Image (cartoon, rainbow, N blue to C red; front, side, top):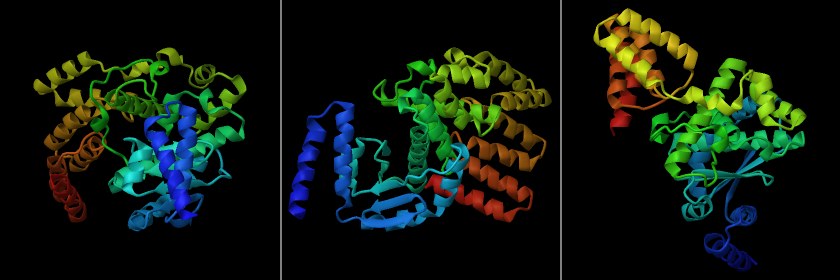
Length: 360
């Protein structure tokens, strides 16, 4: 019987690699492939997540399960209640993961409530992948409960919510996913084959930034409110306008960088008008935050000003906020020195260790 299952697995594999091109059929065969992963896998149930994993990944599961309670709680808060379903998370052997994931870090299969993660990822990337796919799981089950089709909510919102959710558990530097920052309307963002990998990776960041802006401007309830109002109106665009007071058709324009503004700021900084620069940048950060493309440039200038003023705690804050965009060993080394100025040896050691880790 075992050999029959293996033969069936190989047949499915051949179809999956070379023959099937229709998305719905691909999903069926992906589910079939994944179901066979139950063979020779370990099992662990934590909260509403069931982990099935290759025995060599036991140490990864030990780390992931520590956050399950917090993951469940945030899901309940964002999507207005618990889901009655459970999510099965697979960490298969690496060669099987490569076939199923096809270059992605993880996938979620709707209806089946299955996620597959690449166990070769580092600790932060694995936690980000798990929580990203969990957000899809909880959000899509919420939509199913109220009989709202997954496609009734645009892709950018699905992915932006998932990225914002994952960011609370394992923030990954934004600039690693940014190349040209070509801003387009949300309706033109096609995350499934709508552009090159470099372009789509930017769309994920744009969607994430936008969801964070919605959360800041309208509160944590905005995600669930948009979903439930879309059920009532049968139109996400109408619901968006009703809740935010703004048209979705041009809402993407807030993402466009104002290069003239930064040219003026750099000129003021060069002239030594640091107090004015600080006042303008703090206001700009408040209005555009929590996340936007040029934020790390803003935090770099503010860090330098705070160092001149010997405001070491605020200088550290700028290093930490910059780390969401890009991480340099030298920046953490500076943060360690700022902490020593405050006689905070514990923080100084922590920042120094981060500097070493990145340098390695």
